[in-house]
Image 1: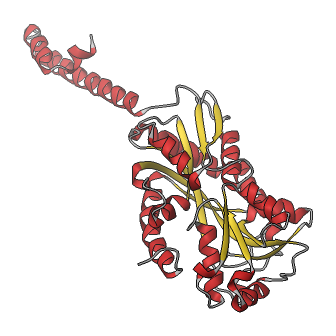
Image 2: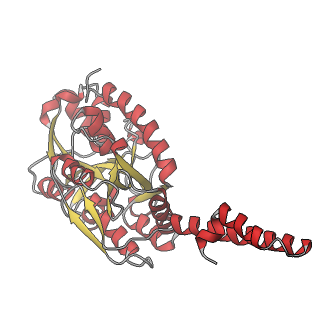
Image 3: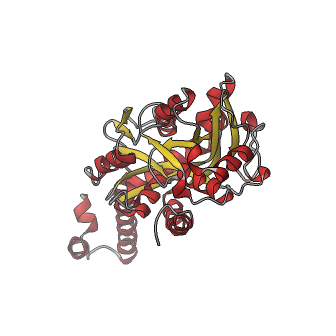
Length: 352
């Protein structure tokens, strides 16, 4: 019996007419069997419509150059996704430029295509709030938040800035005497922490000297070379230089000291500086992908976040747990947008 004959009520009526000669009990049995088969077919078709998996290579588009946190996040995710059955292959493409706008613009050019993923970070909100980007988070499909990360400020060992307290004292005396550097766009989490440090010194954040680099790798190289005074970036980015004792970390934006290799780093708060803030990172897809495609990525990244291997990556990169699925991520972005809108005004990054 075909699917059409099972599902069409007119076909049922025709069969019922043809089988009118059957005894009553047999007719009841036929009708019951027919209904069960119809339900099974419909359920099977619904399940097939809901299932999806990539049909070709998945490209992770990074919004900065090689060496920074976004690039490291993408390559860690690439390693995990390549081991997922049903994903043919995974590549990473760096599209640095415009404070991350080049990558987002690329994503908007592929509506409805779930084979493209890109980095979701605080910058997508701050760029929107500050007017640096016309691309809103509502114009894309946020898939998840995988982890939280705290911000550190560090100097090279040759620097005369000994601590975060010393840094605050210096900019209090002369805001232009210290050059801060960060990546990748004005108003992001690194800039927010710089603003908090300025406020702790009683200084207008706009009075500070800042340099913005297109990637963390380039900026940290400049800081190590003494071309800028203080690098403000992720804790994970600082760890290799901590290991070879080439930098001095002044403070971290966590509410308390972190575990592992960051345990020796004092928080800004314990030094009397109210600069507590965490950023978050995850992945997004183009606008217009289907519910089945979102569900696939929800399931895949949930398994990644629960794995022991991922927890090891969190520790190795000084990231903190904080997984949210697509629905919860959207709620978080809505709330965070309101929070950052107020914060950036208070810090003087945007006008009222």
